[in-house]
Image (cartoon, rainbow, N blue to C red; front, side, top):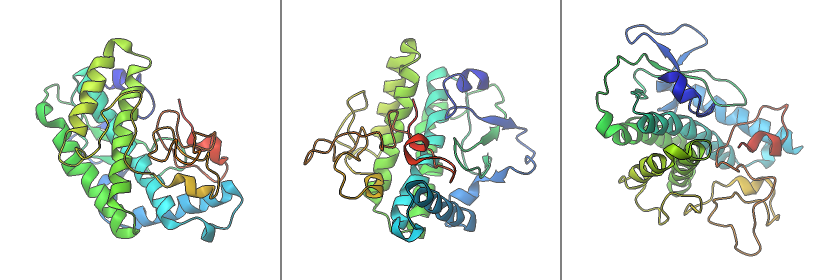
Length: 264
């Protein structure tokens, strides 16, 4: 089943470990991501430095909230994608932080390891509540505690990641498209996301901005494909955008901004 999930793309792929055993290094407990921890702080600082290096600017010129939003969006996309994909495929995946492990890598989707599925689908009917309440909401709160980023921005990141995950399923697997958009609709209908005015789909527009355009201040084209700013004051999607699939991959210092932020 995990092979079927991985076939949907790298953001959907997860490793597995025995439920009663902790994987060895370089695996780290995902509880580091759901509290304002030193590793999460360091990741935001590293992405800020990488964004600055990629743009040829001093780190001080990249606002901390831009880096925090980038880290948040990348991690949220990594949680949402396998959860949505598993719901569509009917395979159990437990992404609750108590049993979830991660690796702190630079560039590309963050590796995740879940407890090996036991074959049943316990809690399958409430997968979206478990994902948002126990993983996404604590991560969002932790980022907001570390860096002053608007909750509207952060939950807009979640909505963007949800829509992108469904699009990533629907594009190569049209036979699963209806189920993917339905799963995205369940997430957007949750108490956390129901204020988003637009339903999931190819024309989805989030109600906030991820702040990535601030890497190119004064450039009206530097907005993302699903940004609330798109179409305002001449703003249009640009090669600088973080998205053709609405995923942000935190870049390493060796990547250019555009190359590190476009996938799909």
